[in-house]
Length: 110
Image (cartoon, rainbow, N blue to C red; front, side, top):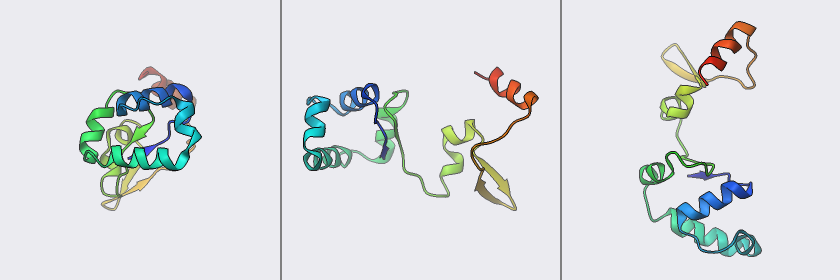
C-alpha cells in the first residue's frame, strides 16, 4: 500500500482506520518507531483486505499496482488514465489539455 497522508485531516483518518492511538505529534516524534509500527500494521492484512478497509475513506492510501493491474484500477478507469494501443495499455500524460467542450463534459460528471 502507498500512503500519502501528509495533511492533518488525512493523518487523523489514517491513524483512526489503522487503530493507532498515538497523537500525530507522537507519531512524528520518532520516525523510526512510527515506520516500524506502520509496517507491522500493514503486514497484518493482504493488499486486497486493506483496499476494502480503506474503500470510501479519505486517508490518501492506495494499493501499489503492477503494470497489468493499473489500467483496470477503478480510480484510473474513472479518469481514463490509460490508453490502449496495439493491445497494450499506456499511461496518458498529465496534465491534460482539454477543449472547452471536453471540459464541460468532464464537469457534468461531477
